[in-house]
Image (cartoon, rainbow, N blue to C red; front, side, top):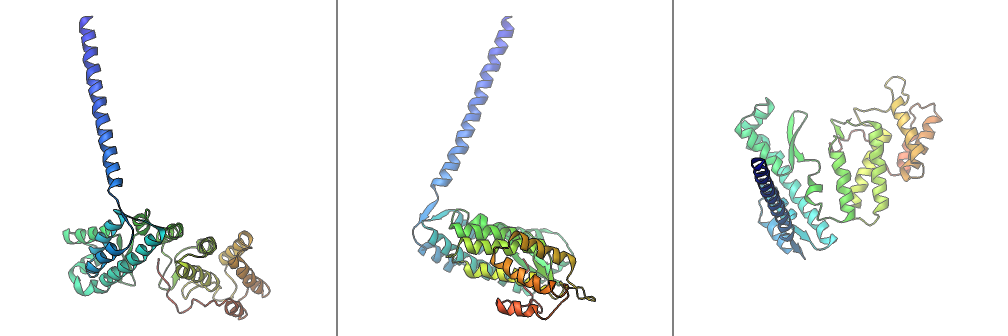
Length: 307
């Protein structure tokens, strides 16, 4: 009996030590997180940020990582400063990414050869790892490689440094970047998904009428609406023989009119639809009048953004 009591005492002591150790670890982790938050420096202007950008080499893709880490580890005092920091970041990011795309074939010919045959060695892994650190992925179109932003990269980088309008903008774009929009003048998403994009951008412009991103938002709204109404070179809306509106497109129009009749785009699509309906949904040149009336363009002969 004494031995049994002694055993229980030992187990109790060990249990207390283990709980004490877990508590210490919890406190340690909590302290580390609190320290990280405290160490974020509040920026009351963009002077230091601009100086950093000026010091970075736009032809060195790793500069993006340096700039990203600065944004993550600093807090801009106002929404206006945070949004301005985003615009500067965006300009540097794409200047650097586009420079890399333009020089891939000439600067890294051996690497590109390996990429074409999907060979994976230390050089390829190091290159892809560098891209990942900088929020970039490798894509290909029409036989050529290019680099572009990863979904959620801008949103993650600026989640603590953005106004409400910028936050919403970045979330919308993150969702779109996950599914490519077009390639080789061909629509890569469904007409219903395209309809959702039209509505989302019109709603964004209505919710944030004073946003500094109005031009960008309006671009997406118009390019999606124009594609919805006119298709693309390799995504036609009308049957090639009968010239009658394709059933899936007709269904998408009807759904949009039903769900969003009170929106600007809903009214345009309704007017467009009625002209087609009056011609038994057969193509007619009268639809050009609607495009002209609302200052919209045909998407034929145009290669829009891919993502």
